Length: 232
Image (cartoon, rainbow, N blue to C red; front, top):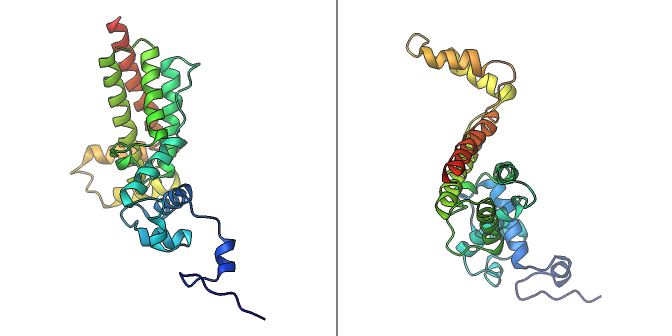
């Protein structure tokens, strides 16, 4: 019986044929999954190649460099965020988009610092920005107010996502244990307000840092609503 010959890369051709073909989409989806697992700082092309079971140089046949891969990763994240529905008023539509963005960024905790950093944005990125701008403009916002609203909302969303991703705990038993540990080590007389906040608020049943999201977002939208009324 004749053994299968090896490919130029040394791989059994039957094994190679059983793998899904390498495409830019497969590289990007693999890159996002890897970054979700190990973070962006530890992300390398060699680790990506291992994760999707290809040779590192093969990746460069589809995407020219690491920056192009990160462009695609950010574009994929934007594609997962719900666009503001056009059949809702601007506030309700922005709430839909903002809540979706929070969940997506929580699923990809590496992404927040990179979302607005790309100089070669993909189609999903451009579509997302165009839809948000369109939501404000359709509601009668001036260009200036549109810029203010978009900037302050996204500053809050990205900041909240980053804080939520880096806190050692946000709620439940983990937060209770963390807060109790801090409280036990704290000289209460030196930091009375910190102690009060920790013991009488954070350690109370039902506390969840995530609840601050809705409060903060509504506070911002209230302010934007007043600015819209003043502009008219």
